[in-house]
Image (cartoon, rainbow, N blue to C red; front, side, top):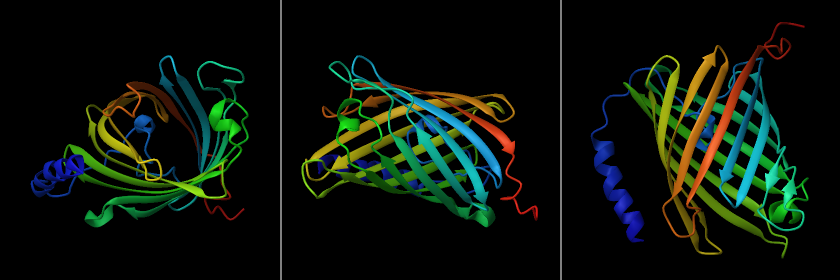
Length: 261
């Protein structure tokens, strides 16, 4: 409770001194471990990858294909090529399959914020580690709002997780949230800093994190990304390294772009 009161005291004065909303919105790189506030363009196909590394304990990776199916609509299919749950039998191998959809309900025009809502499902196709062996499907609903304030942008995310429980027919509820500030340091370089939390009411466990990262545009449509996330509570991992990339293949879905074919 004291942590929540302190966070509120810190955030309210900051919000009261925010400048007028203006400028180009700067999204966070994909390594921010949050939803972000954008979707790929209509008819565009994008490939992105990410690896979370908790040194000495766990490695999790995912490759996703994002398809822009229409104005503000994105469908994504992901697969974990490698998952490690540490030591022990069956602790290394491929991860799970994910399916998600995003819809951008606010495009940032005329002073409005950028906003998306996302629905996702994780299918337990892996038999690697405790996550894969539980044999239960997880679902999530998330939303993000972002706004530009001159040279920087602010983003807030809330995610509701509905996690399958192998020990009973009940669903485990999980809440996650984050507040991030994103900056454009140069035409090729964007960076962010972030505070986030994950709360599981049934276990009375709350993990708090702080982190920062950046995305470097190598060429048009191709970006490399990196970040570090620090655990701020005893329940959270000490730190995690996150690496990613995003490669936009371009508008190669002519039917979805309304070409009349």
